[in-house]
Image (tube, one colour):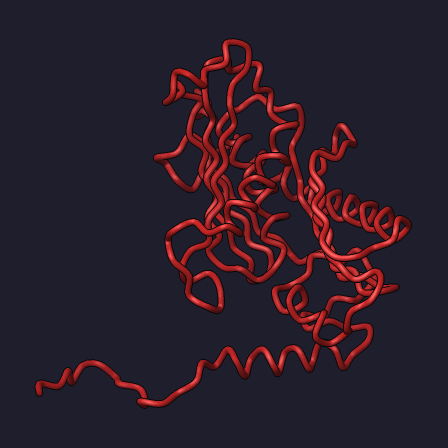
Length: 277
């Protein structure tokens, strides 16, 4: 048989290196009580460093890119434009449509382009978080489409998707009551992990065991109005722990707020026409 001499062929029997990576990182994260894998401290409002940029895709009305650690997302906004289905036309208000998908290479296990049940649930949560912040009554008989693509999943994708979509809407010139920022935490009994990574989201149950006050919380927040537009909780947490988790997420949103404002200001300056002088 002909052999491709330009291709480096691996061994016939092999294992994915991610299996050994997960074990090493998981053991490292749970042997130290206070420090986390990336150097942040437990029980403190210490979010990951964020890189954001607007206006990357010229074909879309508005676009935004966000990178928090190894979590990378990009969002495109199209519209407002005429509704495709006339029977769903609302004469008094517009319609916001969201679609959130994972790229096949974004997770440790390769996925497919077909939207799964998890992606549909995340799209619905994203819609419920963004809708209170958009002035839909300004766009009657129109629809606004928000498409989010997760390029790499390293935890807290829903929270960062809310922030990225809000930036894309602002970049598209959609009238909004306020920006919508997202933040998430992972609760472990008496302590918490803010902006958890993928290993922290999926490995805490194995290391800590089951019990009370173990779960995750994601909050969508409007900082200027000081209102919560969306809340999603998993696990078992008491009332006091849940209330404290919401306050922690709000503090995390306020830490992101100046970065988002600066990115939008730079995007507006780039789009502004050059001065005559």
